[in-house]
Amino acid sequence: MWIDVAWTGQEVDEQRVKGHVAVVIDVLRATTMIATLLDAGARDVWPVTEVEEARQLASSLGKGIEKGTLLAGERGGLPPEGFDFGNSPREVSAEKVRDRSVVVTTTNGTLAINRSVAADAVVTAAFVNVGAVADWMLDRAPERLLVVCAGTVGRFSLDDALCAGALVDRLTDKFSNRAPVELSDSALAARSLYQQSADNLLAAISNCKHGKNLIRLGLGADLAVAANVDALHVVPILEPSSGGRYRLLAAS
Amino acid sequence: MWIDVAWTGQEVDEQRVKGHVAVVIDVLRATTMIATLLDAGARDVWPVTEVEEARQLASSLGKGIEKGTLLAGERGGLPPEGFDFGNSPREVSAEKVRDRSVVVTTTNGTLAINRSVAADAVVTAAFVNVGAVADWMLDRAPERLLVVCAGTVGRFSLDDALCAGALVDRLTDKFSNRAPVELSDSALAARSLYQQSADNLLAAISNCKHGKNLIRLGLGADLAVAANVDALHVVPILEPSSGGRYRLLAAS
Image 1 (cartoon, each protein chain N blue to C red):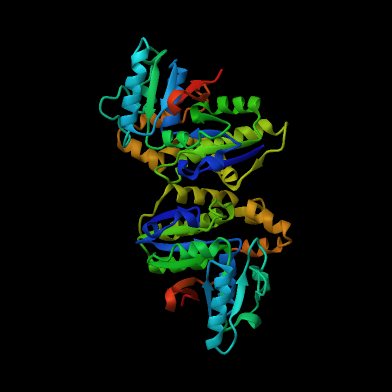
Image 2: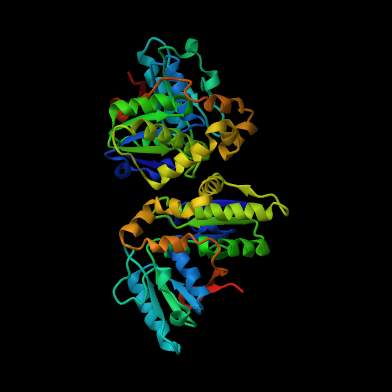
């Protein structure tokens, strides 16, 4: 198995993902939120890039189903006007989201998902479900894997790189008995960064730019949730829907 | 002091380097070669992007000076036809290069230099002269520093990232008594990668993609030269010349 890591969603295009299984990571907080929503029983999660698009999609999805569709997401770390949730997994409960569709828009994570749709399959990972994603990958056994860090507005983001490294670390462990694993330079680097911080992930993500921003916004408690490795057992997988849209479902 | 690291020359443009001092790094092998040439007494080094452009410049420079201008560089790791040198520092001696101009073209390093020219100053670094560059920076004390890894054809290259990390490590040490040093996420990551491999740099760069390529080409001995930390005391600095061209000189 060949494993490569892209540091930003902007690095990724159809050519780079084609023939790969893609794992999209936005630890703070899109993919932590997506795992939390599906784990709490949400029917599906619709990632869209723009706020206005999110409002329109929620309204159109809402018409056809018994319970209304929920809107979640952030701009500058905070929920846009009229949204049911921000991007904080601490707001999510089974009571609020069970069997509901949730439309999510975030600054970096949804862009990274939308740039990866040409892959053979797209799943999302965060520290909270990295073990579940590694197990799913062991069953699927792809020949080529591209881990897509969302990054921050086109720049390297250490929190995402650390989580990519956690996934590479798990996969090289799990696959070592089955087939040779070959790592790109960025995959080697991600694993090395993770191994150096594995004993104190919360400190590491509190010290990076994105973590500091959230602390400044009074959302520091989200970091502890995001650093809770293997708390959830869900694997969000992208599925095409009508109208060129995509939704994330819990893989069975 | 603010320190940022770009993983590839392609990431860099006028907007990103403006107001920064830039340090360009292409460990395997452009900036190792440039330091070696200037340390061996070359008058100056002219970095150009294209092979044909290199031939033309060498020919035009050669006319006006007593001794002929030399041509050095590589494509696919090997010297283009008619070049005096490849890109191997082991070919360089004071006898061959003293007081001569050398035109250098390489796949990634010269592109990274040419994309950084809008910076307040541009110097080049490699493991061989990382300490000299850190000392020079201590005198210059810029407010904003951008370390530009050349990368490999637009992709992250671990050898360059390790050297960027060595420089960040030296600078945070040296500046810690003078002014607060703030690191971007990529600068934090580079330093962390370096610290994990500092005890065995040669193994680390032998295990990355570019190192493996050179070993395959029979140029593995260049890796040991490139990993020889602080072997040279020269700081190559970029200076504008006529016709929109730039040359590197040993900083005094």
